[in-house]
Image (cartoon, rainbow, N blue to C red; front, top):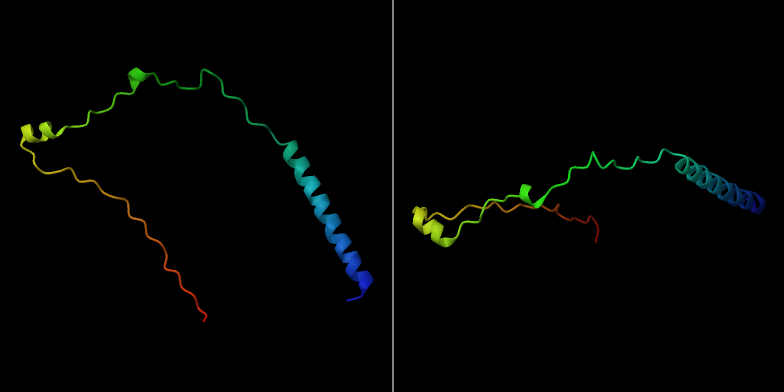
Length: 87
């Protein structure tokens, strides 16, 4: 490739990159901004609304006669096998 053509190609790529960046910046700058939340739309939870089920103790299990422990399912994570096709 001719040295002049190579230089012009570099300048063209640089100029197009700068113009594309400026246009993208202007497009995002003039985009609609998100509306702020109105206080009436926000649901505020008070501590009285947060009622959780109590955790049973060991004595509760022994009194109920249910000696079977609760079953918890652990999440399973499967990773793909890594294979290389080279030496």
